[in-house]
Image 1 (cartoon, rainbow, N blue to C red):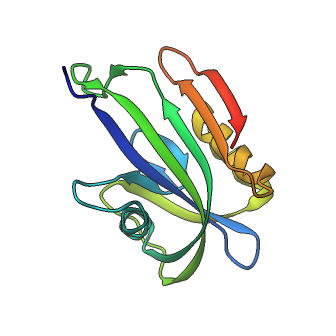
Image 2 (image 1 turned 180 degrees about the horizontal axis):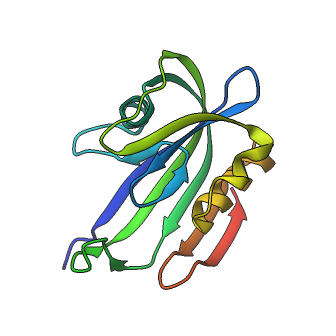
Length: 160
């Protein structure tokens, strides 16, 4: 039996006391909320704290899990050769607790954007859907199965 291969990733929708959302501009993905892959031996929460700090300079407190997402499409990485396997992503609401905005090797810009204007910045369909789930969050967790390549398609969506 071949063992399945999945990428596990976390995303942080960081909202400050002035209804601003932390966004980072990445090399390949445009404007997104910060996050990234969980490293071997790392737990989800530590991974999210690390990723947000690395990408933006902001330290966070994690408040709520709000979404679980599966990108079940297999597609080629930016190098055009490497297959990207199925991804499992977990999004959390976070609050800033310190740090200073700064860019990184992964981000060319970082900014606090008014909560109502965020969708004017995010162009990736999957990230837009995940942010909209945050806007609708009332306590139930969104589950969504989608593919992003060759085009964005939602295969399943429900509240859990």
